[in-house]
Length: 119
Image (tube, rainbow, N blue to C red; front, side, top):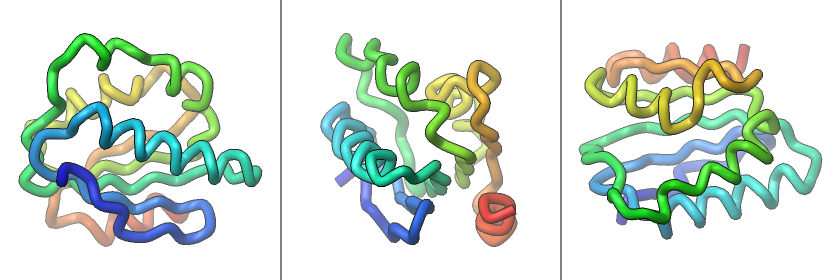
């Protein structure tokens, strides 16, 4: 499995991403986010990249509609993982193109990421 919902706490979603992330994994995460957004939540996402191998590269990844429509419904996004994924993660979520605060933390800084997400 490429994604695991670790915890949902009010407006915070904590997810662990491992292996090769498939489009079906992303769809499941987007549906969860839509349910919470529908409840009026402005979300905070903590994505822990553990043994992460990237995104499955298929044409259906070209759909940026979700982030275009709902990206600003995320207050903050924190990624924790190997530094080699930093630029790809920022590109994938459109850092700099939306109001959402987005940061990347090394695996040793998980607690710092959790504190930053709550600030």
